[in-house]
Length: 420
Image (cartoon, rainbow, N blue to C red):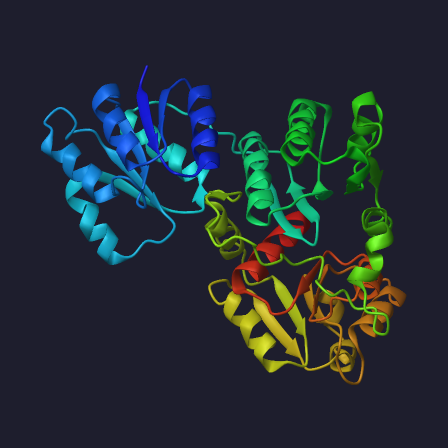
């Protein structure tokens, strides 16, 4: 049995890695700081050390220097993690048998792959396609799950939720689980049970403050068939889910005159604490995977960008610059609808606020023509009614401005993957 020493001052990171590595058959020793790590390094004689760059009691450089000076510990390989990585740090530790340097938040599949390669041990990582995102805003924890259920991510989600609760100092959390574009079958029942168990235990939220937003009949039946989940509400109405969670606090979210959401529920708030997140819900290959999937498509893919903001037009064209896609831009909805080839687009990025013809008028016109083209709505508006109205048109995604290229690519990959 291979032994791994984990030296990290984040209790959540230690707990997660300790549990995960033990499940994979490793013997694991945990150290809470540099001094503790230095002692356990000599006593445990591990086959691998995973350690943070920032340590107290003994710095990582002091620990590594002692390790190098001891002929018994010098050959032990080290994997280092750090909230910040720069050339100077890498040069500092290069002489100490550092095999890999990861940036926090760590993508766990990349770490497990590195451990497997260094120790020559096969680690069976669940590679089921799955997107999980979690953020917190004004007492509500939002968890979005798409595509499928992945065992590694489900287990990681429990620690991610605990990290968010700590970062934002959440006292009485409420939980909205959004399961969109997901196919769940009876074969996924164990993963589904683990998902809900982890979320409930990880948040300690009362079940009446848990809402599940989904169109999946299997998920609905799964919850309804279990007495222990009797107080959890499952709905396919975003409006109903939000009303159920906000209750009497609705007025805190909406401006009395404009009814705008004061802190957009699709966005994350600013953490109360300053320390960085240590765990990532994305896998190492995923940012590139979406890119590679798109790049593999030929030039028959046509994307229309309907937005009067030239900056947004250029941003979207730049995001797809490594693909062969045909990108056509329109300054307003009227120009788009007057194009006889508009309905032939494979994907539409649509702004809501435009001159001549706004986004809602475009969606109404497309609906009247029975044109079924996937739409990603772009808007700087966080009005609750605006979001709900757009979703009722069957749009595939609602992206809040300002936009980021990686977000554009990820959303496009999700939708085009379902269409091709």
